[in-house]
Every structure is written in structure tokens, then in C-alpha cells.
Length: 554
Image (cartoon, rainbow, N blue to C red; front, side):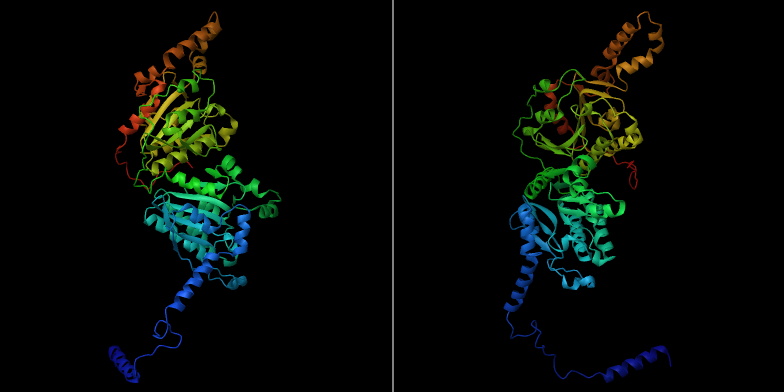
């Protein structure tokens, strides 16, 4: 018999064996959906009970304990930061599926993280808020899946995502399921990078894998005293290498905002942290296809700034505070500084001029004379690239003697780190404007901004000095033999130093060679920058040769 005939015979046999239904199926006693005698009320009551259980989190006692420490509960954070009534939650009733180590007796709706979306001042944002009252906020497969989903939705809907971290790290009881839970966060954070703003807030413990998820965000804000961030905790460090260290010394806000540079902003408490997030968002667009929103400007565009002559000494070796210059020229003296405590010889942050948002990169002569070092280079390169991906023009305020010399900087790789600044400026296609106040020497010339590194407008005060080498070393090199043979070496040397200054150390030398576009009166600094911003408002760059991506010297 052929195969097809065998199949037909078997099919007929089975059909004949089947017993036809004498009457339609009737609903069973427990089948609420099919039982016409049931009412809606029990179903709705059950939903209400489950939602109430989810809202309890780890319970009244645990939530009260964190409030006594001056912290907000997981849902209080969301209510505080979002517009009233705008929050829509995802996966409220999701639970972990682990049954080992007694975990089948420790199930909580939501699995220790609240996720969803809402609005901040009418802008859609996605939000992730970990709940440290549930299993320490630890992350397992379900916990991680909720975060992955929210991060992906933020990218697909082209909206910012706010991550409020309070996690003890990977949930040990779930074993290798944590590979999915934790690693998936890194994957989605990385895919989001440069597409939608990602803001991380450390509002409790942020250890192990959670710390890397935060590090992949654009900005990190850490609450002082009540939060800690590290990969390996004090107990493990003591066990492995015998070193004793406190939580605060290892991962407190002070160490990360001043030494490691991991944290961009700090806050005194949870409420201030959430306020700072809202403030930061006003300088960021929804996504990489938009510009930051402009604001109405009551500060006159044509306002002159004669006070700059009082702030900045004419003598190049005298110090002053560059933040005073910034506040003098920006709208309403408002400057939102980033990384204030880290690498203080360089200042970065956001402001508005003529209502437009711009990023500012500025040397600070009051700290190390404004020298660029390894940390300053990293700080600048990161900020420049962040401005570029979110279509934010950049202003460079220049007063720099050069890169920091010395064995320590060279052996730690200042060449590699300094190259990051050069790469970042070259890569950036947003409008770039520089104003040279007093000096710019050597390698700091391309590092702080000239046309040849991609700047659109380069302005200089009449006090500006620009050369690859300063007058004293230049004269020693150029006139070594003449100095040795001179009748009065000291007088000859001083004469040549002054001659070098008169010829080369003036902005007019650079202006004559179109290195700068204009020499401006300091009082006109504000209006000339705003004019440049208006000029470049619709800047279009030519497509560059295709490449998968560049290879920045990380």
C-alpha cells in the first residue's frame, strides 16, 4: 500500500472512532467567565486585592524604615517626579519563577521594580524605579525582563528614560538566570545610547551589575550619604584581599563625584535628586532627531558685559574664576554645571544664550592654572560627545597654558586621554564656537578649538596669546647661539622675548592668517556668541565617508 493510502485509511479509522457531542459543552462550576449566574464584583475585587498587594511593596514596616532614613519609597519617587496622574505602569503583577532556596515562599507582585511611563512638564518619559524593600531590590530574570522591556520601549518611542537605582545587584538564588536579567540591561542601555537620553539616579545601593547599567547611561546623579555604588562590596574586598574599607569611602557620592568621575551630579536627598533630574531634562531633547527646546529670553540679546574687564585680569599669570565669566554672559546668569567636583581645572555644563540651549567647555585658571590633564580630557571628551548626539551647540571659553607636564601624567597616558578631546571635537557636527580670552598654547590649541579641528567660529579678545610655544622657551631655542655670543646675554634675551611677544603673541597675528574670525571687545562677548549661534542655527554638514564607527582612543 502506498504511503498516501495508508494515511487516508488511518484518518478514516480515527474519524469513525470519534464520538460526536450529544450537546454543547456546559460551563463548569468554577468557570466564572462562562457562568451567567456570576457577577462582576468578585472578579473586580480580586483585581483590587492583587493591585493593593503590589502597591504594598515589601510591606509597611520596611517602607517606614527607609522613610526614617530620609528616603522616599519606590512609588513616592515616581509620584514626586512625574506630572500628577500621568503614570502608566507595566507588568505590575509579574513575579519571579524561582523555586530554589525557599524562593517559592518569597514572591512579590512586581518583583522589586516598578516600571512604566508618564510625563514631566508634559513631556513623555519612561521610568524604572527599583524597590529596595523587596529582596533588597535584587535583580533576577523577571526583574531584569521588566527593565529590558521599558528600555526598549523608550528607544522605540524615542523618549527619555529615567532609571532610579536601588539594587543589591544580582539575585544569587536565581543562578544563571541572572545572565538574562542583568546582561540584558547592558544590551538595551547600549542600544539606547545616542538615541534617547538615559538618566540614572543612585538612590540606595547600586552594586554589582546594576552599577554597570547606570554607568551606561548619559548622566548619573547620586544621593549623598544614603546611597552607595560599587562593583564589589566591603565584605568581599576584605575576604579576598584583606582590605578594610567603609561603604562611604568605597562608593559614596563624594568619592564618585570628585575622584572616580563616575557621577556627574550629587544631591543632598531624594527630593533634590529628582528635582535635578527634572532640571537636567530641560537642557536635553526627547531624542537624537530633535534639538533641545528653546525658551523665552527676557535677558537682552544685545546686553553688553563690561564687568568682564573686572573679572578677568589682563596679566596672563593671574588667576580668576571662569564660572563668573560664564554667568556674566549667559541668560539670567543661569549655569547648570556638570561634573563640578571632578577635574576642576576644566568646567563643563549647560546654559542658554538668546533662549537657545548650548553646552559650555571652559578652562578654569583658578584651578591648576586651567591646565588640561588626564581627567579633564576625559571629562571634556565625554561632554562634547553627549552634546553632539543630542544636537546641542558647544561654546569653548579658552584660557589655557597647555597640557599638564610631568612624569605622572605621561606614564598614565595623557597622550591617549588628550587624543580623546581631539577625536570628540572632530567627530562633533553641531555648531562649535570658541572665544579665546587670554592664552592658548601648544597641544591645547586644537584641544580647545580652532577651525582646523572643525570649529565654525573662532573669536578672540585683544588680550589673547596664541602660539605653539611660549616666548621664553621659543627664544631659547631660536637664539641659543646668539645668546651665548651676545655681549650682554640677559639684555639680548629680554629683547628677543619682547620682540617675539610683539610679533607672535597678539591676536592680530592670528587674525592676519585667518586663524581667528574676529578680535572682539570683551564687553561684546555675549552678543557676538549669540550672533554666531543664530548664524549656525540651521548648520548642515556634508555626509562623511561611510564607516561602521570610528575608533576613539579609549
